Image (tube, rainbow, N blue to C red; front, side, top):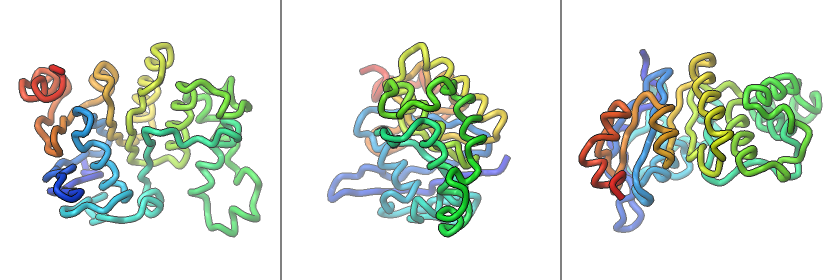
Length: 247
């Protein structure tokens, strides 16, 4: 399989704090990589370096073998990279369907076409399909701000898939999602991976969720990779237990 995303000796320093300290890894096409670690370990900073939110202090980020270090999020998005954030990015005064249409419009044609084309940019059918995929059809016409937190998290994830991305980075997707929704959410992500061919990188604190979803898990502590391998191997790694799971 081809390598979709690669980090080479990434560093990000904030003054004397080494938030990311020499991180290297590669993600193959179709893989679901989980990233775990204690709070303050550098996971979100790593995501932000990968996605152009902040420039790394040193090192390289490669997408399909091409150097994209420091490339702006919009340009990466146009290259098929999407993400969710810990904090919800939904628009509370728009309906669930309208949120999805808006997310998809960012990837459709030129600005002039978006301004003067159909009001939905021809995306209603795609939005309805995504609502069905994420079990949100029954709230399609409700304002996003009136949905439960878990439903908003599902909507936020669905928005990331509207453009059919080949690489999706999910930042704590299970956070705040109740158990009744969590199982179906996990199965939906598995299906999107299997059927749509999307490659995932997932930051997550819910160990049951990440260990059952991901094909490989990487643990970061103090800005460094301390374990990288099959979920059960990482879960039982003494270094990981001492640094993270034992607390």
